[in-house]
Amino acid sequence: MYDKFHREYTGYRHFDDNYSYDESRWNVLPKILLIVIFVLLVILASGTVLSFIFRKTPLGQMYRHADPAPDQVIAKSVRKGAGVDSYNKIGQVRAITKAEDNEDTGEIVVVSPWFTYPAGDSALFEELSQKERMAKNLVYEYFSTRTRKELLKHGEKNIKDDLLKEINSQLVLGKINGIYFSEYIFFANSR
Image 1 (cartoon, rainbow, N blue to C red):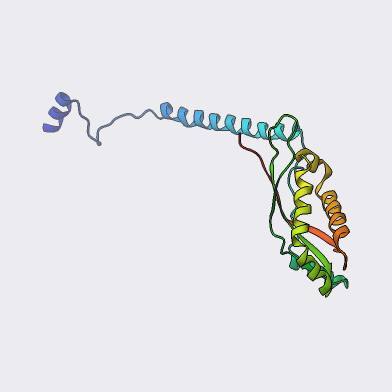
Image 2 (image 1 turned 180 degrees about the horizontal axis):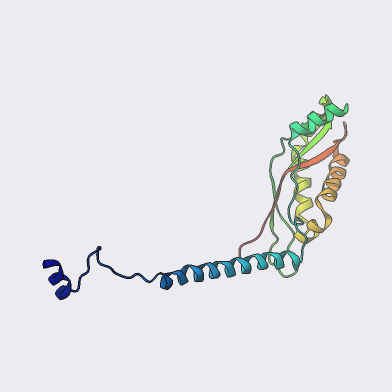
């Protein structure tokens, strides 16, 4: 009797009451959420595909393939039978490229060059040690007299060939075989 009175006058229902639950009302919300998620995924996927199709530069053009480490180059040369040693004491060279037409200053470029030379050539190693500052200045001048666009258009391989010729023209006791860059990074100016 108390239960009946309690339900009639207070309006509260108990769990054991026969209360009808309308499931159809709650089944619509998950369907709507799934449709919204599907539409968002379609928009993201189509945007990604369209950006790849209509991009102005080919994929990977702006990325640089890293040069091998000195140990790898030495090991590879030993396997080929023409041993080389590396001279990697120059360190980082930081230069500011020549300014573009519409810019006040150029961009900062950081290069860490190292050289290979014939294995066991101690005279050339000594000359490279003595002319380290000269080699660093040649690298600095090369990058500071060209714009970023010119450097990118010329390409890293051609830059290395140019530097190899310039540095070898200053050496007397031997010639370096190759130039590698541990770092080759442009930093955009923040305005």
